[in-house]
Image 1 (tube, rainbow, N blue to C red):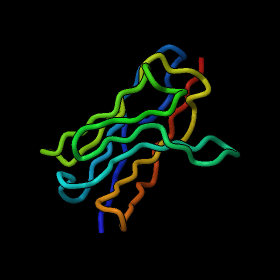
Image 2 (image 1 turned 120 degrees about the horizontal axis):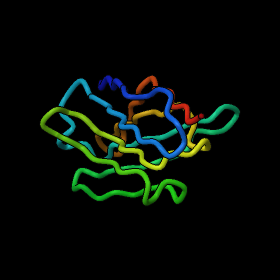
Image 3 (image 1 turned 180 degrees about the vertical axis):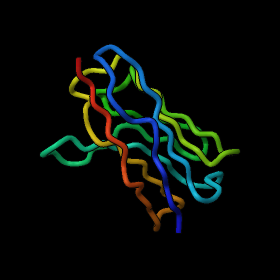
Image 4 (image 1 turned 90 degrees about the horizontal axis):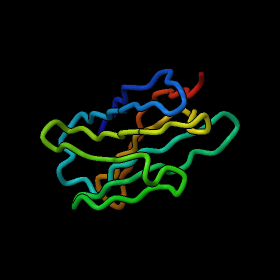
Length: 116
């Protein structure tokens, strides 16, 4: 089992920046993937960004160039740096851990609202 706790969400103005954190209850050093997803009201949960154990990253087209995912294995934490935020980035952001091809775990989410 892995517990994930997200933090860093809140209200930000358009054009602003925010950093989300996701801390796991055990070492993520060998985890296959760590990712961030988001779900806006009335919409499905979509991938935002993912980072592999080797440090490779992939992003949704809508955030590429604005968001950066990173991981610090020493503190079991994955980050999502979000810059140039837009109102359409408003959603609940979820962290997902995939230790291997069989297991996956979700955090409870942290809300992000981009509004003036």
